[in-house]
Image (cartoon, rainbow, N blue to C red; front, side, top):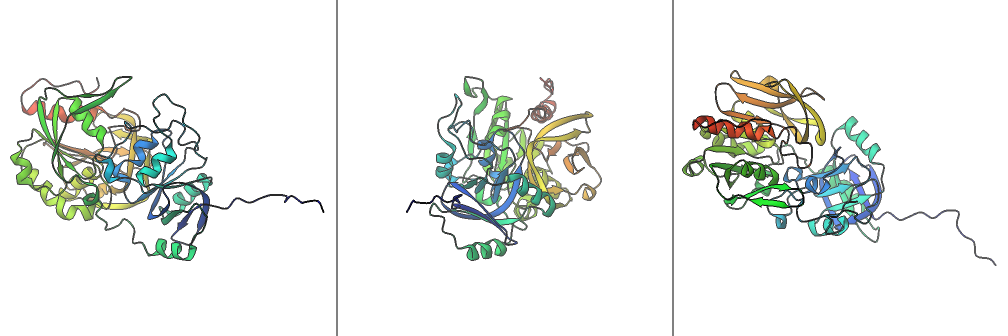
Length: 401
């Protein structure tokens, strides 16, 4: 008898994304095997997947990439953002539409799949990321378990229980999980085409950066403007910081619920605000500053994650396209008298910046270091340095070089 061929053959899924409501999304596994429980968000950036996945602000999250082709340019040792790659601070999972192809870029040093395995990031591909993005927009960022098993065997009932039982990011202090273990000095300067990163030789000022999950390119931009940057753990006391005699203080980005981190961070910042030292905050640092000044923060419906967000700077009247990564936001209505709203999102009107009236203190919600993303907001680092230079009676830099 002639052997019959089936009309079609179904491929056994080797990865699943199980949402807290019981929804099961099947795909093809790549990256690390095993499972991780986290919150699912989507990122709309077209480039920079390595920077995104290594951003400590993504701790406790699974990133769904809306751009369909991820991995084509491979990976390298330069495009990472966490300070200590061995600690693997950043996203715990990733979701792609298309399968990862072999890299095709002159800077590529490895394949994304292998890099994901080394980072311990569980990933899956081959799903309709548009549908998942639409779900997040409609229902908010769900808690979920992402799992990868090469044999395709999953205990779905257990995964559903884990996803439903996870408490989520509200009330979770993740800064303590990703912050530096000890103080260090940063000297690397920004990347130059075909030359790589530089090294600072003669700093002209000193900035202490409180590390809630800081990104490398933030530190590079500060170093590139002449700052010796001393990076300190998130719980470092104000007396220890002031003993370092900084010219400026920087509050970094980071993950988790700002109110949870604020339990120990806010009193430190309030002490620092009693001085006249210029202070600048980004992302979680922005939220920490708002809390220290008497404002409130709240969980967002779908968050802001991408490199194409329009923000208006009320201090200049200009609109910038910026990089964003946050699931909590400052409640502008809660800001007390003497705190000015300086930046606002043109997507939803949410707060993106504040300044303390008559004081050298300001912060922004977005990521002006632009790694990845447009460089429209690089001027904010010059604005910070100018506050220091003004205090010292020095000539100011042009905000936009």
